[in-house]
Structure formats: C-alpha cells, structure tokens
Length: 310
Image (cartoon, rainbow, N blue to C red; front, side, top):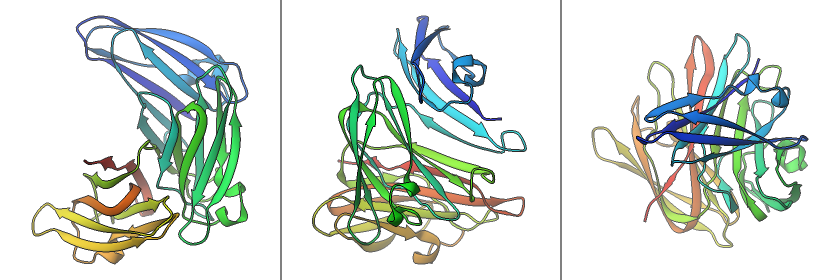
C-alpha cells in the first residue's frame, strides 16, 4: 500500500492555515484546508483522501503565514519497505534541470510535471546522454494537471541509458525526477526523488558523500553540460581529515558525465566527504549515493541536487 504524506510546518508564533490544491493525473483539481497551530507541524495522509485513491498527483501548498512544506512517499512489501522524500519548491518555473536519471533492467526513471496554472503548458524536454545527440520531446501538461513521463518509453536511445534532462515550459511548472529500483514496479524495493534546479552555474557543491564502510556505500557525481562546447570541470573531494583530492573531467557538449567515486577516486577508502565542482562553463550537477543492508545490495539510496555557489 503506497502512502503519501505532505508535511506542513509553521515556525511562526502566529496560527496559520495551509491550503493544499491537489492536481491529480487525469482528474479534476481540488483543495483541502488545514489549520496549523503556532510553532507546530501537521501531517496530511493522502491515502485518506478519496479523490486521490489510485491516482498520481502533484500539489500546491499555500500558507496564510510563511511556512515549510515537504512530501514523503512510501511503498512496497513489507509495508513501507521503500520510500523517498523531497522538499517543496517555492515557485514553479519555465526552466528546470535534472542531472540524474538511469534506465534499463535495473532502474526506472520518471519525470514528473505539474501545472498549477489556469492554461495548459507545452513542455519541451531535452534528454542528454553520455554520447551522441540529445533526444528532444514535447509534451502538453493541462491546466491544473500533473503528467508522468516514463522516460525509457520516449526513444530507443533512452531505453537503457544514463541521462540528464532540461525542461523548458511555456507556462511555469514544478518539475521532479523519481527513480525506482530494481527492475519492474512489481519488484521495486527502494527509490529516490529530487526536484530540479532552475539556473545553470559554474560552481556547485554537495555536503554529503561516502564510500565503503560496513554498508558498502557507493557515490556517483553526475554532471551535465547543455552548452554547445565541451566544458572542463575540476572536482574537489573535501575529506573529513587529510588533504583534498582532485579530479579533472571533461563534460562533452550537450552530454552528461558520471564520476563513480569508488572506482575513479581510490584515495577515498571508507571515507565521508563533500564535493566542490568548478567548471569552465555553465553546467548542472547532482549526487546519488547507495548502500547495502541485510545482505541486499543497494537496499537504500538517496539523491540530491547540488547547491549553486557564487
């Protein structure tokens, strides 16, 4: 049984009201209102809202006093075996970038678009591969609707590939990327999800990364270059002790590059680290990390978009 929990928090000393507009896929939008006491939070269980039964959906949260919203989602057997969480974005945008995505026999990747506006939005998605020209597709997201794109169905080149995505919309939309593994939906036991970034940059950072240890951590740094010229990037691994370790990579034009830290940075043995990326041209980046548990390889995983630095 899947469960979906949007959480709203009110850090103010003043009571607040949260209005959540749900945007079901293939259904009519509707709104529910929830009271938030001062300095408190409230959980909303989507499984108890009849209009959402058996549906995928997006949501827009509006507070009467500034607040915080996050979404947690769980699935699988045994109950809540897998799940993911993502903070809400403060506003929709006509541009989004996602550096992580993978398809094939192990991973399933979905691009999730929602349109909170009153008019439909034409959304062009450019899929960047490690080699070769990008794949470009255009979709329509209706007013007050959500749309799911199973990217491996969009082109034969996307059926078994590592991929980054750029989203360009005629009307502002929020955009999120979700990945599940392993295999088909009947087998999934874990997932991660992250929202995109809206601006390219030349300097990016992550605070979390790990390799090895008892849980067998594996970390991947994913860098994409939507430009028309190759970009050189210096990737600096900031260790908890010891001198930083650097690697220089070339990110080809209109392509995505993957740094598998466990293999390509052998100096980091059973270590935790941060990552700083400095590039010769505009790029976007994300970090994915996986670990083992209970004898299951990659029983857990997470992904996070990089923070853009000045």
